[in-house]
Length: 593
Image (cartoon, rainbow, N blue to C red; front, top):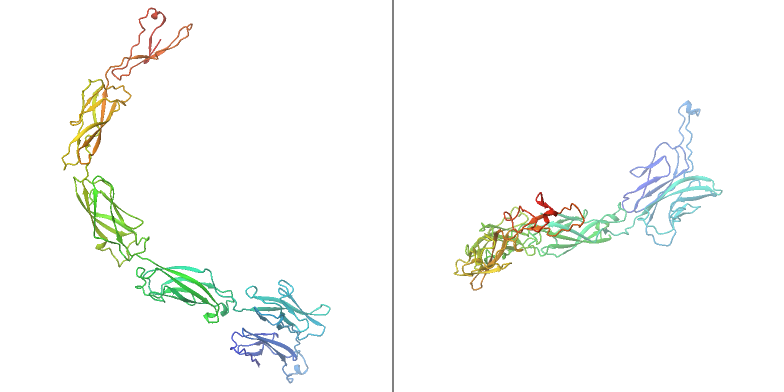
């Protein structure tokens, strides 16, 4: 057993050994021990010790155990005697390490490949990616001494390790030893600062959330070796804006990057905070956050979101409005205060009429721009029926209130509506007025009596009648009594009569301060009088002079209606000789000549 002494001045943390002889190993207590009995002597082996802080190699000469005295006849005679172990040449390529970002001059020696059996006519060769393959020429080997050198600056983030092969040949190129693998690790340098995926992050937290509520997670990445502290990040909040009511409203877990609330739930009140958005400057630092570490920065914007913890309240307990009778439209705008976040369901108001509108004359809708309640008249009000209306209005939010908040008396209001008297025009009854008359009655005959009343029963007003529309100018009306008489013959066959009905419109006007009028319709159903003679249709027909057995179909027509029309009888005229040339016979409802 041989005790090895290795000191990197940093506690030998992460120390590892490589032994070139297969019959030896280094145990946990840094003792070089044999795996089995070793009988040979004079053999040379190498021990390579390496960690992050140091890299060194030692040569060990092997001295075999002394010969034992013969104990048995077999041993005395030399029968079955163990032959001395003869080691073969052992080409040893220790694992090598090179720092990235090394500064010139180049080349720089990074290690040595050893061959105990090296002779003057032997030379070293190195092949593989980084030597004679792309990227070519990164590493070179001294053909005589076996020293391996790096010829340029390396970037671990591009290539973290190289695997090469080393062999020994004679001058003629004949392989003597090898090939053996040569591993070259590129040691990481802290040359990459942490980078956040985005420069600005956004998160939300509900007002009143318990202390310790996770708001969001910040994550940065470092391209350095994740096994080293070069890529071990720590997070920190370096600035909060604004810094009221406390400069430390939030905390970030240094390792996980979780941002949590520190402020108490009662102070995390959106309606009392100076702002609803807080901006945090977050720094990620490698080397576990030590001062020598590199840093990256990002901004986190945290929005304090609203919950419905404030009920809407009317700005007044009583609203009043005057409305003209007979009108429609908005009568009054009801205003409310709500401290919750505008344009959310916790702020938007829903109004309802809970008393005072049995006939549903009113309707209330929410103005989406200002949250006011627009109380409208949808069925015209009548001053003569009800002068005053008292409505009870309730306001609620679209979203339900939180359990510990309720609607109070301020969430209801009273509205007094006063109906103003307006001079209304007279109203005809019935409208339309329908009568039946025979056509051709004498001029001046009575047709109808118009009936119009003034809705303004509390006022003493007179009504006068006038003809507003009389297409055929057949009628006249007494302006005071409202009697309608004929001023011309009523003709059922007139083009102004449709479906035996003649329509005229009359106007009634009161004598108010601002006169008002109304209109009524008179429909006269005209009965037929037999005042139109029948005629033959067609009245003229043409036949060829030499044509024999000519046939002509004719019929009877009458502008009157049943029973003053068909059936018709057609006969030949009294002209001499017609009966010798023509004959009339019935064909269904028509006649054949």
